[in-house]
Image (tube, rainbow, N blue to C red; front, top):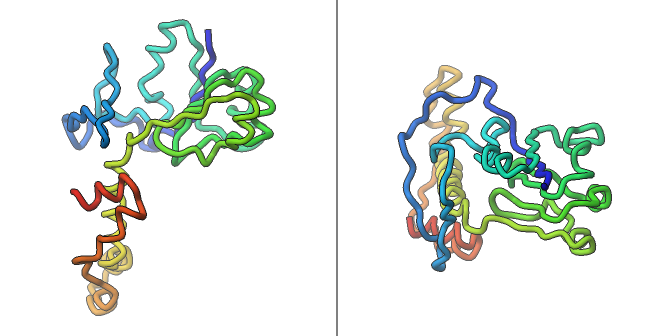
Length: 211
């Protein structure tokens, strides 16, 4: 059986959530271009719950351990004494996230004699030394399109926060002020400013414009 080493961000400091802002999430059956979303026979978690932190384990623990695999989940990934470094030499699969990546450098790959597959639970592979992976016959994979909607929403949020000067404005209010002139002079409109988004952001850019 295989050993899967999964690196996820820490649980919330206030404790694992007992309730959520939404009772359900939209059902997505197809990615752009016609590719269908995964269709597992069964899942043992409620869609929309927090799975990306250590306790959530991406919803994989029961499935993998039920098949006899070893599933190790940690957030400790930096330095020679990290748990990731200690568990890596006999791991066959490594899973990590775009915003909490487990860096697979050439040096780490050289220590991982059994490693066959490096998966990004999301999009991107810049945390993996691709030439070293090719040299050692390691497959590097991602979940294409998986977060294109959330990325496009994040982009829209950042654009609005910047052009409306939201963060400095918010600080004025938190500090007890209502100094409209101090933040209004930096606030801009974004009407008809979207034409470059698709070329800059690919699928996420098109989603920004479409939505």
